[in-house]
Image 1 (spheres, helix red, strand yellow):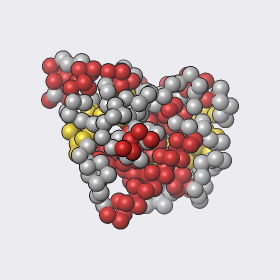
Image 2 (spheres, protein in one colour):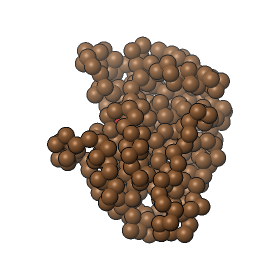
Image 3 (tube, protein in one colour):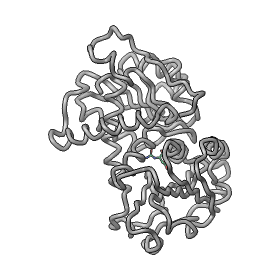
Image 4 (tube, protein in one colour):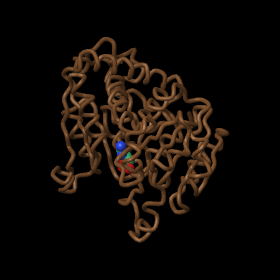
Length: 331
Ligand code: NCD
């Protein structure tokens, strides 16, 4: 955890209902960056996620957040993040205001983000926000009284994805310390890898970055991790590192973030994980992807037991249930 980063303070009035809220450590907090989490916090989140999984398997839906409302506000496309937050809230007995198409909301009339957020929080207890600009969630949190959960702020961060990614690694491989994680693809624009690399720096992990020259991991992130003595290597060829990799984290080339479409065409398809590539990987390792994929992992890899990307989504449901329960003072 960076020492300069002050975690957001509790926002909600402790005199509001629910006697147990005041002692819940995450009650009323925003989730804006993975920098808010230390190893103890992660253990706590994963512990709650396990309980959520057990409850979903036993009873499906239960009433922990009955009466609570989530505003799910997406200024950028989403399938999994939006649907999993909706599923998470509904499995906890709460309900959801979906604002998926901001062009049909007052945003299309020119309303500012602070105004949209201050309006929605009149109706909701928590706001999940995805926005194309870095820092949008932090800005929203400055204005909001209710907790804001960052569901992706441009090329910035995607903290809930990184939490579910780490939970996936820990569940699938039984540990995090000692692993070699190879991130491949668009490391420049991929907010999921920005958040995950930061989170992994809390562990004894070796990181490999495999990317075309114009899509390398940003220098600021490499520098930030260097300060924590994190072993990091950059490569252009996957072949060099595939044999030593425990977690292969594949990402999509983020077409929508390119200024010049010609550059996209140059790098799209630079790395494709096929069953042939998988022959050079360890027997016990996993392939992850935040999805959507657009050709980076060929479908012939899907039946391979090491392909964890669909299981990863299910882990995401439990982690997001845990986070909602935490910020609403119920975990
Ligand atoms: C990612 C995102 O939106 O950053 N998707 C997701 O949340 N599962 C990755 C991507 O869009 O490539």
